[in-house]
Length: 263
Image 1 (cartoon, rainbow, N blue to C red):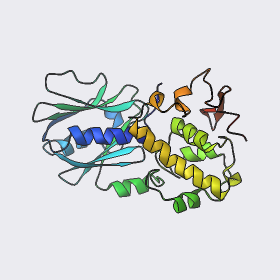
Image 2 (image 1 turned 180 degrees about the vertical axis):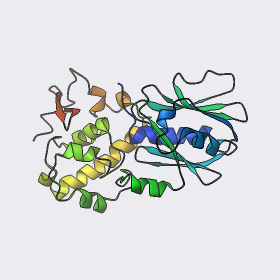
Image 3 (image 1 turned 90 degrees about the horizontal axis):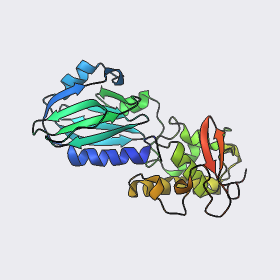
């Protein structure tokens, strides 16, 4: 199943980054696709990283911020096909390295992105960057009361609202389908039609689905059989019986079970 990086992907990238890239002296940086550097210019990014070390990282929604020992932060957004690839000195690097970082021990970290929809940059303050991008609270950090307050009174369909990064940051198309399936809510249901119990269930299932996805290494096909995503393909069946239906909601391909998720 081809998928765009969502919150679970980026959380796994964060853990991978922390395991492989922290506390190593950066010898050389090569931005091979300058157009991906959208928040600064690529020469500044290279100079900012060279001669320094990454000391920590922070994920927020679909963004990964990697702090350097000079108190600047590398911004990474993985677009549609981005991921990180760490290799030892005599190993091949990734197939589409758009940013290549060489460490003094001879190992490399690449930001790989076949379709070049990722974004890179430098910031002095991730919190200020998050504010400027008008991102909503992170989907795994928001509390129930704030979650309900964000959506209260909105009249749009629930699925596009869940995908709106300015409301809650981190949910993408696949996991929105799973969250709605777990909560037995039709994706075209108006947000103003949900009662307090449904909002609470939606919140709890959002947390559960994202945490389970991280636990299963963001492999949707490997999720428990009671989940929607292992069956989310043309001709797929609902776990309760019957066929999945495919519709467009807010311009996005959407799978749901009509017997379970009634409008």
